[in-house]
Structures are given as structure tokens and as C-alpha cells.
Length: 155
Image (cartoon, rainbow, N blue to C red; front, side, top):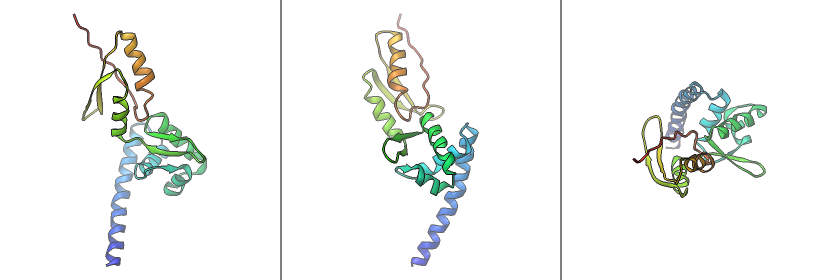
């Protein structure tokens, strides 16, 4: 029976590898460098990892892994946990949603399908305050990659 399990695991890895290449190609098409796309594909399969873990898993050179991880962090695709060594993890969408709900001015939050993942209703006294909330509170949440503000006026 262990031979069957071993062969099944090999087949699963082969399927996952081909799918991973496809996903990495799509990420490159969306603007990530090749190393960042490869690091993301490896990181998404782990709860967290160090740069050394990702070098071993991906074959990305030691001299390039930190550039790739910084790119992922800058784009909000990964979160850096300080320490020696630093650890990295992909920010799960539910965690982003939970963090958004902690922002006092966010009064409603809805998941979406398509170009945007979430829509948040923000209420504030002035338009300037809405801008402050978006820039200083929402955009700083790990996992928030971009925002688009639409304003409603009442007559």
C-alpha cells in the first residue's frame, strides 16, 4: 500500500508543478518579476517561510530572494514578520477583511468577484477625512494592494 501512496504523491506533485508554472506565468504577465512570482507560488503553499526556506524550495539565488520578497511585500502580497530570521507569509483574504472591519470608519464590507475583492463603505464627516482614512488606515493594512475611492453626495 505504501508504494501506491508514494506513486499517488508523485502524480499529485507533477500536476501541482504544471499548475504552478501556469500561475507563475500569469503573475509575470500582471507585472511581477520572475523571482517574485516563483517566491509567491512557493509561499502560498506554506503557512510561513524564511528566505532560506524559499531559496531551498524554489532555487532562487540567495542574492535575489530578498529582492523578490521585498517586491511581494511592497505590492501587499506578502507580510514580513520581523525577527532573526525574518519570516514571510501570504496575507489571507479573510484576514484582510477582519482588519478592515476594525477600522472605525468602515461601516459595511462586502466580498466581490471580479476585478475587486472587497468593497468597503467608509463614513466620515468630510471628504478630506475619507482620504485620510483610506491613505493612513486602509492602504497600510497588509494584503491591501490598491484602493479606489468613489464618493456619494447627498442633496
